[in-house]
Image (tube, rainbow, N blue to C red):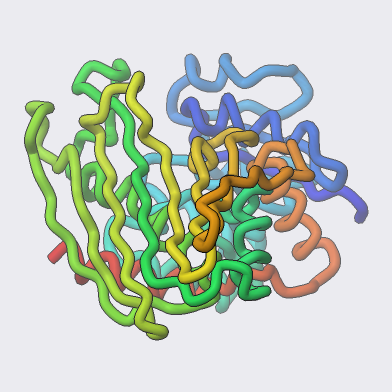
Amino acid sequence: MTRLGWCVVGCGWVARDYVVPAIRASRNGRLVAACDPSDNALSRIAGGDCVRTTELAEALAAPGVGAVYVATPNHAHRAVVESAAAAGKAVLCEKPMATTAAAAAAMVAACERAGVVYATAFDQRFHAAHHALARLVRRGRLGTVTQARVHYACWLPPGWAADNWRADPARAGGGALIDLAPHGVDLLELLLGDEWAELHALTQRRVHPYPVDDGAVLMGRFRSGTLATLHVGYNCPEAFPRRTLELIGTEVRALALDTMGQTPGGSLTLTDAATGRDAAVSLDDDRSPFLVQVEAFAGAVLTGEPFPFPAADDLRRCALLEAACR
């Protein structure tokens, strides 16, 4: 088999605008089935060459399905992942893994018992700017990295969608923290080549009148001693700069703007500590991070090679974030 057949479960805007187009554009994958409780959501999936159904069992049984992309609300991740594993399908599941670390562990265990590949869909691992920055850190270009800072926010009022499940604690498991912070918590380990030693959080319900946090600040330390802060929020107006990643080194400061998110592009700039001069880093890959991600996962499934991001590390970070939330 040279192309992996995908079933997308959960057809909201992430699946519709990013996941499905990535699968269709991939060199080693094809869309076989789409599943969602809403016929309206299914109708918005472009193209007529896949099975569309509101029944998960029917979607998993569609001929040619080899992997499932789980893009449902958070509370449904576990049931879908366990069903996919029982059907012998590899699983790529949207972050956060689940609403609790225990549910996330059960998901991974189900995939291990079934002998299928599991991975968490952190698309920002596959952004060209982040790959370039990780290489610079590994080569020592920044010197000793002392601090890392992430600002990743958006404007998400209660009426943002007809069914804004991200503001529903039962389905989301939390608010801005559980939705947005996993990206930075995961990405900083990749960039620094280091593990979190401790992580703490403060949350706020400052602007939007819903029963989950609309902003949070996380503070932590890596095993190397690097300190990090992450500011996430649903309460940052879209016109403001709100996707910033900064690594402070003793020789170079790296600043990435608009690289965190669902799209390629943005900029990466290095500031020299001795001269103060800025130099832009040329990004050699303008492909969607979703496209790079689904091709990497399909490659692992098709060849039997390990996916480069082990589920055990995802579980460790999930438990760390849950403890910080408490």
